[in-house]
Image (cartoon, rainbow, N blue to C red; front, side, top):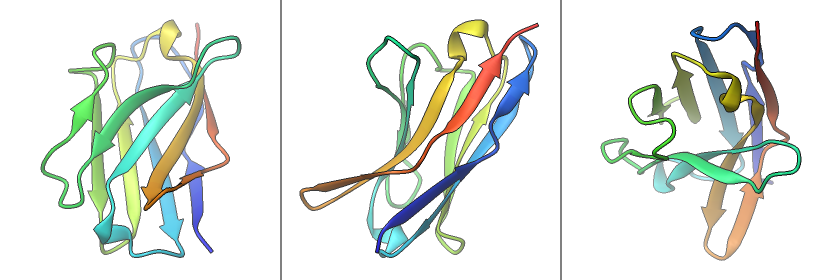
Length: 116
């Protein structure tokens, strides 16, 4: 079955960096666009970044443009989110997401906390 497993979250100071990974299995990874979402308690889940199947057409939320980079390694069935210049408002649980036909799949999430 489809599985998405995120890792790489943690506590980081403002201005710091983290790299999130999402290991996918159970489907043909190279055939689907992949996305990262985030959700802070009390807020709606929001799209952070999306990458096309070939990795050449990334899209970003305005709030993270120029600071975050999404990438993928189709040979490893893994999508990454490099987060630089982190701000306290980036604190959230980050989720990996894929839509396969009409079904959506989410990972379990990884907590990112930006605080001094």
